[in-house]
Image (cartoon, rainbow, N blue to C red; front, side):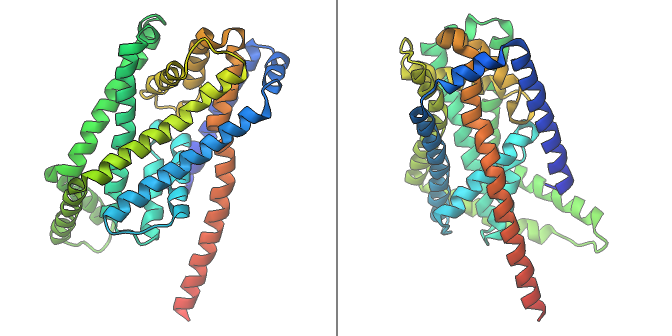
Length: 345
């Protein structure tokens, strides 16, 4: 991503946040919401923060496992940073399109071959989407009133999101195992590169070489079924940890009518319904759907609960991650400049 695109995405993202919270606090008393939030015990807040930390550790564990199966070794902190940049840049870009390219960039800088990084990222995306498809099926089996008793708009958003997740899984499988699609993508890439470059080159041999190595890597991953099964388990746990924040806040308000499984499906429903929205981080839409559905479990506290859940699971991590990214990027750039100077000398 170019710096200009990042800045534009950030401005749009901040504008959407401003509009969203303006609408929330315009229709509801700020004092009431503040008092409700203040009444939540710090213990529950700390539990939520621990869940977020475990979320990033889980994704780091996934990257360590998959890359190790491709004979590449990374540290736990490298994996956590890949997870951090994915969370942050997916949040501020439309349809969460910015996370994977940034992850790929840092993996490449860490000397991980691009073909191996791409497979790790495609597989990760596919498992993410699989989690939502499984969650959607469970909702239709055990909690279908969420889908059919909340109006046509909510119902349409849910099925649209579910369809997009299914299509994404199919797309990821094609990207991993269909040589023609990979070859077509590579040809388009190198054609564009030739148009932008003064020195025209014949990249046919390069495409064949990349294709052979890429397919070999995909086959190698396919042969490591144990690694894939463990990756699915780790990724499912990762998503569950993040969505469990809603249940923690639910219990913080001393509610116990709905059980953990129902609250988890409620949060999965919200995420699926946001899948078809191109707004960065689903800002505005996620708040609207959450607030609407939270009436069933939080009663008169539904707006306050939505603000707390959304802040702890999304906005607060973004602020912290922004500072981490700025610090790491500054340090990285300094080291890169130092290496360039040493090379020149």
